[in-house]
Amino acid sequence: MAALAAYAIFTGVALAAEVHVIDGDTLRVDGKTIRIFGIDAPEAGQSCRKPGGGTWQCGQAAISQMEKAVAEGDVTCDDRGLDVYGRTLGVCKIAGLDLGRLMVKEGLAWAFRRYSEDYVDAEDEARAAAVGIWEQESEAPWEFRQHRWDVAAQKAPEGCPIKGNINKKGEHIYHAPWSPWYSRTKVSVENGERWFCDEGEAIKAGWRAPYWGR
Image 1 (cartoon, one colour):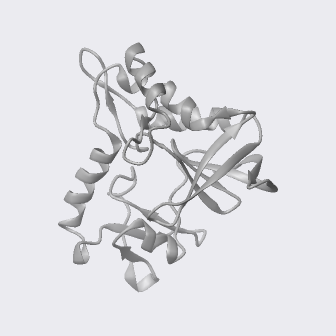
Image 2 (cartoon, rainbow, N blue to C red):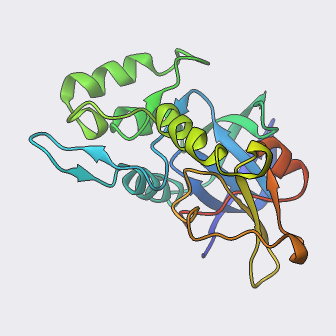
């Protein structure tokens, strides 16, 4: 997928970079994975409920919104340390616009209250306006991930369900159980592919998450 040309700024140092949108709450900037601090967006393959029945592709909508925002200008990120998987946490902005706040306010991400209350006010506003994910109460992404993890772990070798795939370009890409391509991805151990027990293990071994956006 094409990358978005941009500049990323960390701790005051500007780095020429390509920005890939991994999903609605994660970017990859100049080879570094940046998890947007304080939010949790629907996963790429996740659907949300519509009022009166039916579903809509909220995960894809979140990705589209992040792509649109990132295309507007240079990305600046305030480093907030690492998460448990070794990904950099960052409060990222474009021309002063806080991407995390934007996603929550548009009803395309939850405030990740387990780790931060920075965007609780934005979530309350989105919920009151019944926009996006708040049109109808939907499964939170952490519940979506846990359910799929539990099911996949029952069938995976040694209960380690993350699939480390090597594509035709030689890229090492891992697919967690909530990946839209999880069921179609096969692991060929004889060709160097492998299973992982968590995302941190995959990242340390040199695998990356798939880019669901540009």
